[in-house]
Image (cartoon, rainbow, N blue to C red; front, top):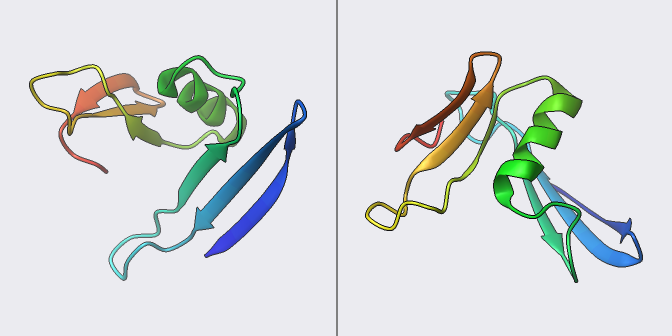
Length: 87
């Protein structure tokens, strides 16, 4: 696990990077924490920027389904999909 601290538009931002989340996958995780207002208006906008930058699958909180709060937005070369699977 690596933790980085920096500035984004004069706001402090912390980024936690976890690689190889378990023995069965090579997934990595980025967790962004902003002190102030982030560049993005919502998680989807952030995920789209991350996908465009890294060119790999991005999964983030969907956060709009009041009946099932544990749904995830997947963005990949296949487009966008909402699923109850985290990966």
